[in-house]
Image (cartoon, rainbow, N blue to C red; front, side, top):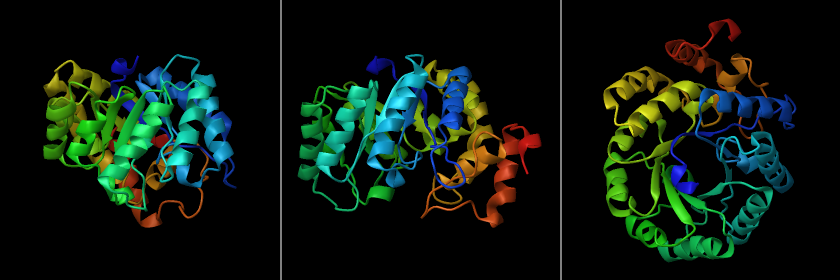
Length: 299
């Protein structure tokens, strides 16, 4: 199963009511939409899913709910990372018990472990839990970079099956693919360079943009996997403005605002995040029009 995790995998938002409570009905409808649109897998309770402000109970319950809704029609990847090894282990065991197909483990943030500390963090979880594990390197958020030598060592551990690279560095991405690509999958973690990294051998993306344009992202990735790069490039060019505009403010602020204006979720988001600043509304609406989003739903 894990070698088949390729293509466009959505880092799904967590819908909320205006008071910040979880909106499970809207979440269910999003999962169904992604299945219809051809998304390859759903990553639940990751950064885009506001994992930082979910309670432990909400985090675990939402993974279980997503697994139940999907009902084996689409693979479910649970975000289970933490800057506490014990907490990451707890979340990963819980995801396995819930029936998730894999987990996504972000590099421990804020406390800045050494490379050896990172190795032992991930090694312990890999040894303790049988669930296939995808590592996630996003130094812009964590202030903790996973160096190539570290990833090379971790790629030899049986349960580690992939890495999401969100450094935004294509040269570094190529080095990862050349060094580790025969042992683990390399996924792009930056929508804007997904196609370029797939040309070099990456096998997919864990995508923010797929929340808004799941069909287009799925089609582009499937074309790239089939080496139809010219056709994939036509879609990629169309999506570039949307990739950029979904980061006008911190993710998931713009993507939740857009989904609300598309009529797919309510406008709930938890502090310290807030609704998208008014100065960016027109720019994001223009980007949505570029990818033929139904403007009738926009206000």
